[in-house]
Image 1 (cartoon, one colour):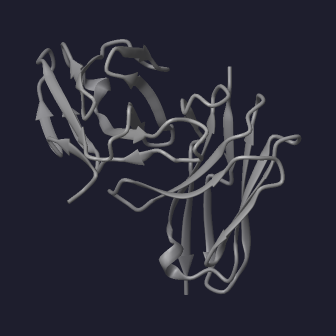
Image 2 (cartoon, rainbow over the protein chains, first blue to last red; image 1 turned 45 degrees about the vertical axis):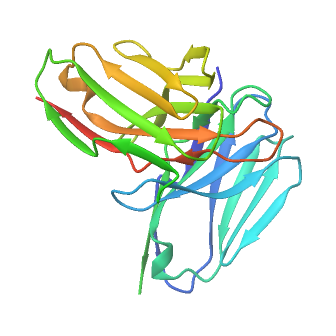
Length: 112
Length: 114
């Protein structure tokens, strides 16, 4: 059974600081997704990582995938308040099925 | 207009009542999904459909049923609602695999079962 674990579950960080959110998964997969959810809102796609070594960046967020280690990271550079949200990673449970298993989410709070 | 819509957005019902949540999409995607979100548990897949004639159970299908009326419409039913089905429900769609596409989520339906 595929399991997806994120850590930390909650992250409170000061503006301007850097931090990394980790996403570990238990079985082979080469498709990993990152989503953002604002309180009371839907999920917004951030990144789609499709191969080992894939790296994508958008603004202050950078995501990477190491399929051999079964690990993805979401790195936050110089955090700003607008990044406060819950971040989810999700893994395709079987190759190319789009049947996603989600992590429990990391709630990020950025304060001045 | 939103690509993925859900109705109703909020619903309060009583134990034992039948309730239907509806999802419509204008993205032209064949694949549709229903998820449930509970605090601290992330999203869990209830049912998914890869085309109109294909319906599959997800992680937590017990107590739920679905209907794929058309490519654009996918409904989730609770035949006899119970309080532990109180949650936030999301519909999502995706394109064919291998195209590097993500899932696109609707705005969610907040369901409370008293």
